[in-house]
Image (cartoon, rainbow, N blue to C red):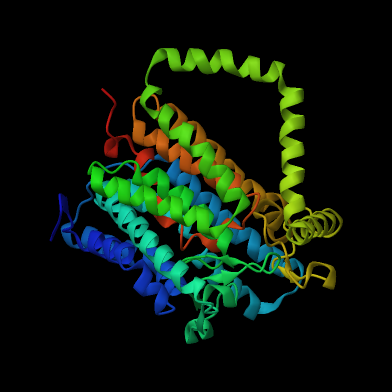
Length: 421
């Protein structure tokens, strides 16, 4: 099948291409969470079937970092079992949590491995991302007009909620939501909540800028900007603005003077660090004051998670999230923050299971960036994920961020990268 200049031929490519270009129909049918959770395992099964039938693999080796991710996430599962055993949570909860691991943490190494090893072309993911961005711009424009008419935006709660998931928001189908603090419209697009749309917009931007076709590249970038603007996420706006100069610097990353400038700039920044930090903190306090209720809930959840982790379950955590008190509006302890969530649910060992492969991946992509500009942009995706890990729980969003994970995996394999001339 020809799609412009993009050839979509393999079964694995057809699957990921179809999921990308039909993102909004999938969402309006209420199947986003289910499709996203099954996608990686389906592509993995098709690839393994092809390997079995053909009797050979395209790539003789898999990047070491991919193995580190796999081992670390298996370690996350073992820590989960230990936590359940320590707190006598029972076989039923252990099985349920293990299935949750398959739909969350396990998808991270799976998509990275698929990106590194399969024959799915990066161009297919890139063009598909531009299509998602283009459709997002149309969706945002149409629904904004509907919003002006006074329609509530709520459609329905998908019956697929019965299969289980992190919460109703993953199965809630709506055109847009309402900001309870301002009373205005706030768009989450096809994501479970508005800040997640900001995260996806930032990741999508780093993929769309790699599109070679100028028309599709512009459509994709405009869609990313629309998503980030309408989601009204404070973190999304900040990260999106940071990515603009980051992307512009891509053309210089292979130049020796680039690292000289960075080497000179770092001491200069450090020398004026105190006033800069004070300025950033003052700005941050002003932003927090604009949405005090949200900030208060997040901070209280963080404090409770840290206190209970230190006092009750330092090494292996509590095994599961727990409902919070009325002071946090019943929000689960361990939500809204990847690292606090890991400490509370899986303890310090669980935190290491994520921190180690993340750190090694950043180092590996930083080295690859010298000769491969796509690796530089994948490094940017990792930086975005790390930044957002302090605002979101990445585990429950892996069914959405998989295109970025795929691109990161492809960049980690030198045999799938394009060397900068």
